[in-house]
Length: 337
Ligand SMILES: *Cc1c(COP(=O)(O)O)cnc(C)c1O
Ligand code: SF4
Image (cartoon, rainbow, N blue to C red):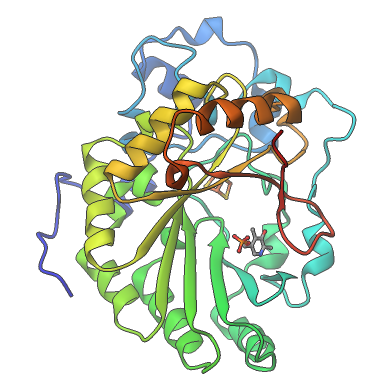
């Protein structure tokens, strides 16, 4: 374990910040000095998928700007409730690759665990915004089935903790789960997909580093950052802590209309990630989930953006443009011309 001060900057613990997060759109808009009356009725959108955003993320938004790229990721909009052809509840048909509750086995060699159903932030474009978490919320006693499934399949070398956000679970829960995974000899890598270093950087505590370090597994952390503005000094400290602990840090983004769908924004994002030791991994086309159609960027536009950033960045800072499909054996890379 590396020595660290227990609090970086916050006077509140991460748990307090999490329970105190903003859930009321009016409160969010007032906090940003925006007039809630200018915002059309969003009751129906809120019922589909409620607002949730910690103050640490709101603090990175620009005051008075309806178009702030961070605000746009979390603010419910009335248009989410307009039905669009082709946009469905389970676009990836994960229900079909769900042999044990809480486990998705779609690709060779790796399984994804819904380690924790809740998130510290609700992203409006999330492809799991309609996922039946209630039936995929493994309590501690259900782990055995999941662990048996992995133990019975020697070709599984990587376990991916996803969610929800696995890091919004308490340390004790993670510790038990990770230690059990580490007992399966053919598992060599533990991957964690999380937004917490961005939305609630106080979560990266010395205790968490301990939980992740004190086992034999190789740790890969994939943060989900869509815009360079998400990485402020607090996130920078959190990421530097993870880097110093020896974890491999990668980023995946979703290409989102009016949030990051231009070459300058994508170039800045890759450069900022590199400054904080995070390598760009994937740039995803939007999953066609009900409620998110207004974020869609067309395939041809995405390919044109990729060509523009390829011309401006070293190869190692160019993410792979991919699309996820229900019955493919990997994410599908989009060809560029
Ligand atoms: C994305 C994903 C993975 C990991 O795929 P990589 O290409 O290794 O990043 C694994 N399982 C599921 C269900 C996924 O959606
Ligand atoms: S699963 Fe990820 S993308 Fe979806 S709401 Fe949670 S943090 Fe956001």
